[in-house]
Structure formats: C-alpha cells, structure tokens
Amino acid sequence: MIIAIDGPAGAGKSTVARLAAAALCFVYIDTGALYRAVGLAAMRAGADLNDPGAVAAVLPGVRLSITYDESGGQHIFLGSEDVSLSIRTPECSMAASAVGRVPAVRAFLLETQRSLARARSSVLDGRDIGTVVLPEADVKIFLTASPEERAARRWKELQARGVDEPYEKVLAEVVERDRQDTGRPIAPLRPAEDSVTLDTTGLTLEEAVARVVNLARQNAPAE
Ligand code: DC
Image (cartoon, rainbow, N blue to C red; front, top):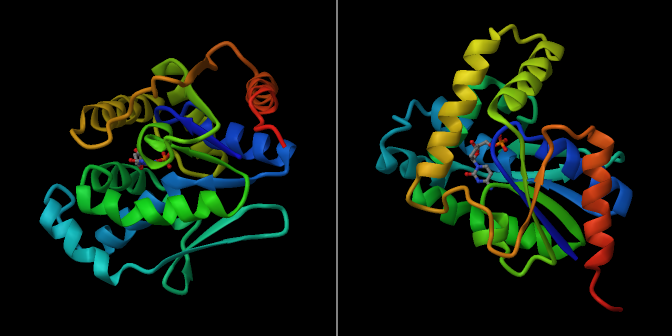
C-alpha cells in the first residue's frame, strides 16, 4: 500500500508522515531529503544552481543511498558520507528547491523514489508524489497550512536545532519556496485531482496523524 503526502514547505508533512507510517507499520520515505542531498552535492561542486546545465553536470558524480535505523529513522548518504544532518540547513532548503526545478534532477530521482516505495508498504512525503511519481498511490493527501503557521513551525524547528534565524526571514523563505515550488514548469506543487486536502492550521499533530491513519485504513486494498 502506498500513501502519498504532498504539500508546501513546513506544512508538517514529514512529522505527520513519519508518525502515520509508524502507526501503520509502514516505511516512511522522505523524498525531500533526496532533493536536499542533490542540492548539497551541487553546492559543494560550486555549481550555479540557477543554471540547469551546470546542475545536471553534477549528477553523474552523485551516489545516493538510503538506510533505516532500528527506530525507522531514514539516513541518507552521499557516497559514504551520512548527510542526514548537513542537508537540514536553510541554504540546503533553497538549494533543494532550486535543483528541484531541473528536469534532469527530477528524472534522476524518479526511479529511486518508485523503487523505494514499491519495495514495501510506505508513506512518502514530497511535492509531486501523487501527481507524478506514484499516481497509482492508494491514498493521496495534500497537507497544507497557512504560510504564517508553517513559518512559525519551521522557526521553532530551527531553534530546537540551534539554528538562530529571525522569524521574518523564515517566513520570507517559506513564501519564496512556495513560489518556486508551485511556479516551476515541471512537476509543480499542486494537489492531485483525487487527493484529499488536509489543512493542519488549527489541528494538533495527533489529530493530523489520526486523519491520515484513518484515510489509510478506509482505503486499504482488499486482501
Ligand atoms: O520537503 P523538503 O522541504 O525537505 O523539500 C526540499 C525541497 O525539495 C522543496 O522545496 C522542493 C524539493 N522537492 C521536490 O521538488 N519534490 C519532492 N518530491 C520533494 C522535495
């Protein structure tokens, strides 16, 4: 069974997807981490992130792999280096969003995402999982929240990790990433026609997770 959770940056997709996957005993696949790892590789290579040709030229040297620890936590590797933490900086968020606009990057990551999802029952979060990557997903959820609420959540997350960024800057980045992610010509962020929209603005985390778990149970394919 495949559950696709798409939506804008900071809507709570990763937390909701991880907890819903745990409740259902499914694997959680964080597809943003793949884009972040490619963004990190491109930054390290000194590529101009606004030049699709320069970004595409980095791809042949990118070796991505994913492992899971005992608690189901996803670790992402660039070559032999675990970059799971290095990809979480604001610079890497912007780099991921920039490389996500490059068709060669999306093609490069397409099969990786499909084969990860088809190996086991899984919950994936991303931008185009229900529309492009896995249109056959059993449940498609478009998870969203207001930009202010999303920025406030991101800000708290960054603070907890010791990254001191002013709220206004985080909000500006959320708005800018929305613009980039929805405005790109290839695989733009939009709800799949057969998706259920879940606005988490007034919901607690537990409520959001419960909605996802219920949708999964209601839509479980017959044995
Ligand atoms: O979910 P995230 O914030 O970790 O994603 C980082 C960026 O990667 C996001 O701004 C857009 C891009 N992305 C994408 O284009 N498609 C996906 N399935 C996941 C992420």
